[in-house]
Length: 406
Picture 1 (cartoon, rainbow, N blue to C red):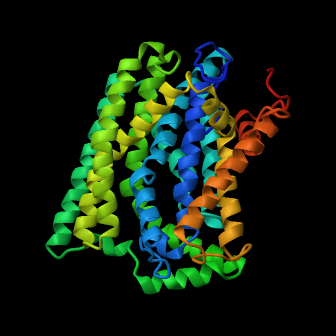
Picture 2: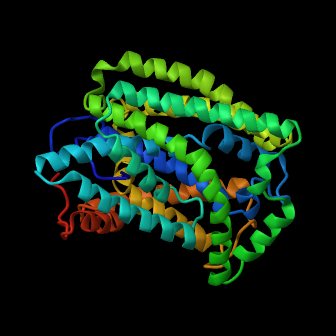
């Protein structure tokens, strides 16, 4: 899930039952950092949520920031989260086995809790919520939990390729004059109306979120859902093979992941960003999406491989990312809450009032504050507030609040 594995010493990995794997916590925290950089750009602008650039910010720096976010961040970090969701699924199976508890009922309660959290998050704070998608994909993982690692990877590749081919076919249809994206796309006038709603009362904001959820649902079912499932299946395979328990024997593999990701992955990200911001039309945009589907996982893997190789040499990285990673669910929801209080009528109502550079800087600041808060919290508590609530819902008993032993 977003949190819940055993923990080891910072900068190391361990497979001992009952201990956390610190590298996994650090990866989750790193993914959380990328998530806030992307999500805050959507939370801060009705235009960005509509797939457009806010017309009031057109300086060179504004466009440079948009390009950096699109190339280096968009569609990469939620894949890391999905990978870790699949990986954690295997750890939860092991935990149920050790405690002689029935796994399926407990996991179904956890998915139910995640879905309710995601639904509330999507309606109240951010219609781009990913938790409900994880809950639904979790049902598929439960159904195929006995799949072999090889079959899981093959299924993930097949899903990715099939989805990319499907998007390319949509691009061909758009080029021929049949634009299937019109049902979910918006124009500048609709984006301006969205801005007005986000500046308004709580009921106006919620109505706007519900309006967007109806359109996002289509994208979730036909686009993001399959990509999340593919990443989860890869995480499931890695978890079954225990590959993150001891990274010392996988240096060559991590190096190959870096080469592939920072070449093909970055090249694909540039195509995606150009198709997003060049104004080349829906057909070209869909081509960029298809390229991104194939190459974004490579860049996400390169990021993960780089962090995993750096952790033993730079233990401060583990300190920076592992604590917020342990409280990822609380921090993920907290990011949306803080951003909503800054940008919507819930608080300061600054939607589309700040430049892309300011918005991204605020996102980085939110993560830095959460990292410091997470360290403080974990000295006093074993779980984050939302993690504690979800664990209670999952196990039907009140969790311990005592912090882990140092």
